[in-house]
Amino acid sequence: MTENPAGLVDVHAHFLTDRYVAEATRAGHVRPDGMPAWPSWSEDRHLRLMDEHGIARSVLSVSSPGVHFGSDTEAAALARHVNDHAAAVRDRHPDRFGGFASLPLPDVDAALAELARALDELGASGVALESNVDGRYLGDPLFLPLLEELHRREAVVFVHPTSPPNWAAVSPDRPRPMLEFPFDTTRTVADLLFSGALERFDGIRFVIPHCGGALALLADRVELFRTTFTPGSGASTRDQLAGLWFDLAGTPFPTQVPALASVVGTGRLLYGSDFCFTPPEAVGRQLASIDAAGPQWRDLTTRNADRLLRVVRSEGASGAGAP
Image (tube, rainbow, N blue to C red; front, side, top):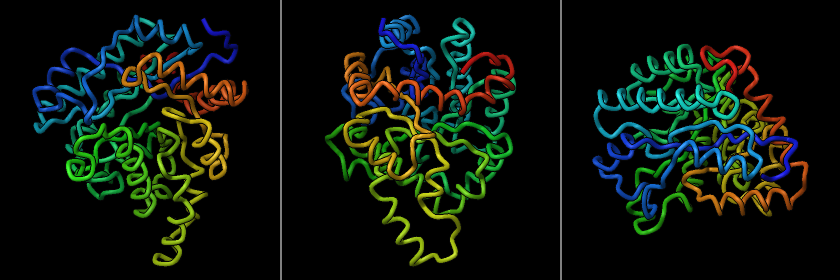
């Protein structure tokens, strides 16, 4: 096991169930988001990876393409299934796992019901939202009731990228996580910013993966357009981005983290492995790049995760002791 006094907290960790993969495959997601195949997952395999790399705790979530494959009724049932499964894993290993609950959007009423069940009954650490839902980005008025409730609860919201609505035209033969995921992350944060949702619902603790996609490089350009064409539009782009949390999943060093930190600082940077969609050997390479950048990164990201999740641990329901 890697010597690691900080005990990393992994906020970007995925799980699968046989039922979930079967329903997604039946819906046409044979190669999810253009990847070669579905990965395999088990809690024992996940624990071995954590032990090997000094990861103390992981917050599990369902990745893209989410749980809604066309039927509102089936999506609500699948969300309950995956959320119950994550809670059961957490209960078997309360010191090692937490969970971000899936919501059956675009059915907002069902999403609100599952949000309440997941947080109040299952003790989830927060919720996971896809970057777009049937082409609607998260600042869309459709989602206002959900954002209002997440704000009221001061919930942690893990925003996971998914394929854009036009992926067949722009990335027909490429794995969409390579380019389209970072771009879609950038689009949905920009949508939240331009809609005013980031300021209006500042109680929501948004976690943005993969070092924020292209946000660090485009922040000043976004600000130029905001101030030129929407004057009086609130706090600066940099200030609003600094209110978000960012995980380091993907390729954080040598380029992305320095660029991101130059815009938002380091006080809200978090560790993320992206396992099981990122294979174990790639998780090892990513962590090696983090460690090569300096021993402070493990301790810093862990302290930040403890601040982010402390309310969940102190006030959660059945999962009060989980991350």
